[in-house]
Image (tube, rainbow, N blue to C red):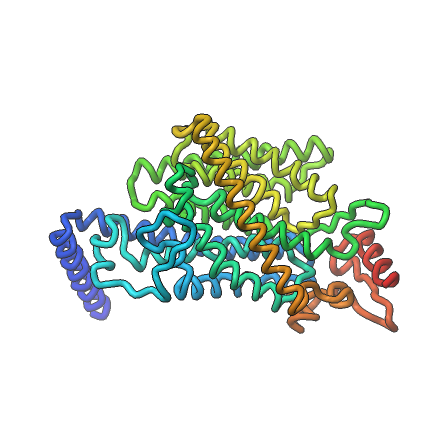
Length: 466
């Protein structure tokens, strides 16, 4: 009996929704079925993009040391929550200020839609609320990219201040230049789902942070040697990459901005082909260099292909997407090696994946696909330079002010102990202890933490030298 009543209520609710949709359609001349389908797909896409934040959290915690896991997870939780709230308060209306073709515009604080904005009068594809939700899921991603590059040595409070400002102001203002109808959009610059607007913006911020922070203790020795510091949990890192790949179905597929079957399916196919090609290219490139198959490089190859295709996923033929992904996979390997050799420490390879491959994917729009040509390549290069200069300077300025006022880096003792204990007083793995202090001497518990003895020895040497 209860089930019958429940079904009856569901049918009544469905009928009311359908009636409302038909009323909207009659008012606006848009098919109620199509409007509902478009809106539903965009909400599903928003959910896919949201789950990417879990992917970033598990990937970053897997590729860093166990003693910093709680800190990584805390930062990722903060970023998505702060990103959604600041985007509602100021970011959405900075990024989409209305009639706009300039550099900075603002439609006011908060999201206050008129009644028409929940109908197809706002947009043929989806409601105002769905528009906000989908775009808000993107907003925090840029700061999450920065989180990985500055991991294991940045003060928690300092990162939180940087991330809040970066998400609230820098990302939406720069996003308005293209997606908000600003000057780059008028020029002809093209970025379908964010190889530059999301990934390179995050990558430039990551580069600024890594430069100001300096490398982790023990990463590079005084004579210039590089100490590998392996991640603590490769299964978690692998789960993270596959969650991110799943999320990209919404990231790119949702950027069609409607449920058009041909456009969405093409976009998802090009996205998956590029990811697969990127993974294989990175696998065999790193295998040839190191003579061993490197899982972390294969995982970053997947992400490299995904970032690379994002700018033009709707414009590419199948084999063009394979080429773009494969080149991104090769680039990410050599980029990781390059940044290590110039002693820019990036624990998760975020700069290589998001900045380098984001630049490549943006330029690829002028080399492959429906928009290929020298004129378009010029537009793409202009966008890369404009976003690079503006983002790097902005991020560097924010980090510099934070360093001057709050300090940016934890003490050597806190870094040695691990940020889980020094910042949170809460180890992620209570049954394991990575570093303990006895009689003033730091002792490495290599067998329990699975940390490299060479890196610990270098850390201890540097600590004693201080």
